[in-house]
Length: 194
Image 1 (cartoon, rainbow, N blue to C red):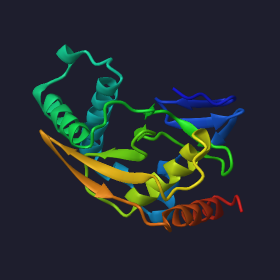
Image 2 (image 1 turned 90 degrees about the vertical axis):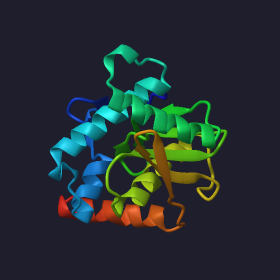
Image 3 (image 1 turned 180 degrees about the horizontal axis):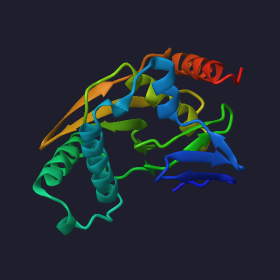
Image 4 (image 1 turned 45 degrees about the vertical axis):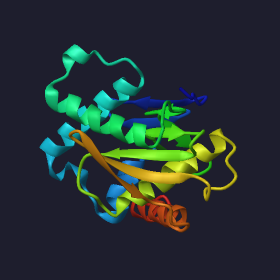
C-alpha cells in the first residue's frame, strides 16, 4: 500500500483530505460535471459495493470464504477468469486511495499492474460516459508514483465482472486526461473555486 504524507481517506464517509484540507473525490467531480448520479439505483449500488469489497479482499488474500454467498463466489469466478486470460498474478495497487498532488483531487484506483502496464476499473453496472475519464484521472494520480513519463504505454480497461464471466472495455483515447481536467475545471467553477 502506498502512503502519502498528510493524506488520509475516511472510507465510511468517502472523504479525502490532504494536510487537513478536503480534496474533491473523483466520483464527485464526474457526478457534478457530467450530471451523472450513481445513487439513482441504491440496490444496484450496494450490490456493486459488496462485489467490489469481496474482490478486494480476495486479491489481498484476506477474504473469509465462509462469509460470502454463492452469488459473490460466482463474481469472484468471473474475476478470476479475467485475471487468468490476461495473466495477472498480482497487482501493485489494490484499492489504494491516493491524491493528485499536482491537481488536488483524490481517487481510489481498483487495480494497477506495473508489469502488465494495465490500469483496471472493476464494474458491475451499466456503462456511462464517465468510465474512460475515471481511468484517465486515476492515471494522473498513478503516473508520479511509478515515474511513468507517458500515458500512451498504459492500457486502461473497465472489466465488467459478471457471474462466472467478464467483459473488457478498453479506454485509451489520448484526449481522456484533458477531458477529465476540463470536467474538473467545470466542477471547480460550479463550486466557485475558479
